[in-house]
Length: 257
Length: 348
Image 1 (cartoon, each protein chain N blue to C red):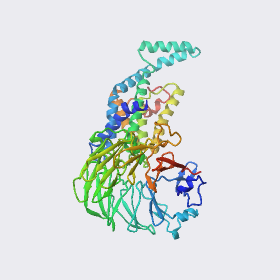
Image 2: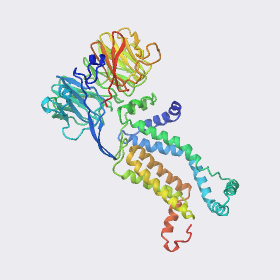
Image 3: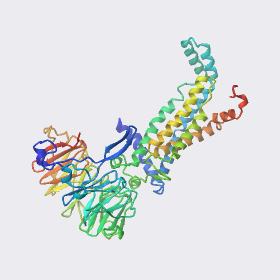
């Protein structure tokens, strides 16, 4: 199983990353390779991302109807379930439609993470291990070992300057804010508010713990997510509506969306 | 650790009175539960000279150790006994992966900061440090008279003066980086490259004397003797090559990456590989014998040692000492072709 994973996913990605880095000057090669590979992978996953976005959008648009049903059948869970399935079916929406594309993307993120970590080979045993995964291509072998420096970062070590942590946390917050629809239910509202803060904070802490090469991947990935959401989702989405809401204090208490 | 072969053969308690000792090299580490001392990694071989032992550690220290002081368990360093650390303070240089070399009353060592350091062998004072030669130097330098040769990850072989560490006029540059430590034989340097070639470079020349291609990197430094290069490769083969022409004499398929440098004991070559198999090979004919696992001598599949072998081999008086990844030391009798004893290096 592990061999199959290496053969089909990890090795092509790892060798692609190393080959890409050899196309640029050694001083910035690996950093640029991570950025480009992240963009390429995100582009390849665009159909899945679009499907995920559409599913999320459709589910959000159905929320008032669902909430109505929840109120109506609050005491009859079985009936509620049946009615919800019916509504989803009528609208042609699969409630798991936004989860599957995300799940399919996970192995690719894991492979990208493994590729970055293996390519950097910070310790002798890592470099030795790298030799098992590289193709015999000249372009790949001549690029080894990679220069781990990029801008102010050592891509093999965590960035202690907080800059990357703030950037990753900030972009993640923006991306989430754009897609998270405010809920009329106060309980749900507080839950989503908590999630909105927890994830960026968590990833901000991860940046301080994990090699900055991985954090660079998260940052680029977030930025691409924001751009995709902006152009496909139609502007700043819920980020703008919440800003507008905050700038209208008189309407507080009313439904501003 | 200092281990006496005879005491281990007799299975005496460690440390025996036969000069055995152990010395824990640690570094301070701050964790959530407070600070503690954690063991330090050592990748290189110790250098031995005048009864003293010199090692470079992965946390960036060079230590000169007096075996007598260590056997008495005295606090380290015993300055009067010639012990020292470099740097003397809590400071460290970048990780040291290669082995230190003792020559000209100095210790020469490469560091991951890309510099070569020359330290006084008696007091550990810094004589000089070179300008950074590369991002990091993980190799062992070669000292020949007044010249030090260093191979780098970015594909250079530099010649430095032992007097002040300045670069000498000759530098060799290859397209790919060098992975192994250089070996000097007569007036040529032999070194493995990331482009899967073994290079022979005549000192003073700008082009390689020859390049020998293989299926993977030559990770371990080759052994050169009597005009023949013995080079273990990560493609699982041992190649024997004519040192002058680069022609292959014969090759031996070990079936698993050869990470450690082979060792020569007379006409016999001992090769260990990552699978744990150890072979004794006739250096002239290439005829080999696989060492059987002492716990299962009848088995043809079970490796000689039940662990990977990546550390350097050491030979003395017909015994080859192998440190495997299971943290055990194995003593292999070459003549009898069997493992005499094994000893766990883990200390409670």
